[in-house]
Image (tube, rainbow, N blue to C red):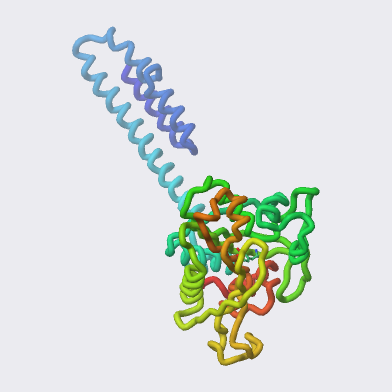
Length: 344
Ligand code: DAH
């Protein structure tokens, strides 16, 4: 039995020497030391031994097991080390290489101006409302006191999709939609930013698409002086504390009286320059007291309630604020232009 054990040891050690992968090593471990392995097989014969022989053979068997285990575990360690080295080599990172540059996006200047204007009005207690860009003839015109064939429709040459649907030419329809949704409740204080569309020239100051911000306030005893004070507050927050406004009489079908608002020139402060064409003033928005007919169509008793409204072009404000000379820059997605606004 002793010889058998010795022979087993020699055989196992010889085979282990040639092992060159972990799978093979494991197979040999099972073959020699496993529950059904060669060593167990030999030790089954222990029962036949005499009481004196048993501890001797037991000792030999333990030595054989120990010797085989030792070789296996040293081989295992070697394989593990080899694997670690290979992994390290494969995952090697050259920390001296220059880093990859992250291209960071920025808020588009028009979005920035819209956000700034929203913030100013939210600070005065307004809520932001929205409406659809594809609008019905009713909301875009009729509910704003512009019946079919009204000559004032000529001011806004439109893209019609069907007889009754068009790309909205102004954000004013959101006034009418908001009034109906409020079901005659007051006060109403909203601004609505959005994209509008007109068949227009394509030049430095005109585009078939642009953005407007509409404002609407309805309540009891709302007066023209409230409108004027609100707009002065707005322009001073937008363009600086020294900015002044003046109101010139004008006409819009949905307001009566109506006015056109100028700000003191953001470039020269009013003394006259190229930007304001030597007048000292720049036109920035239209406004007025909401026409009684518009209030009534919106579900408000015009004897009890009054209101004011205004509408401004976002591109115009952005051009004045940032000194941009062509409206088309905003829509061309030219990175050289947009990159100038990454830190505004
Ligand atoms: N919707 C007008 C336009 O596009 C601008 C405007 C003028 C809006 C007067 C108003 C307003 O709410 O009261 O030309």
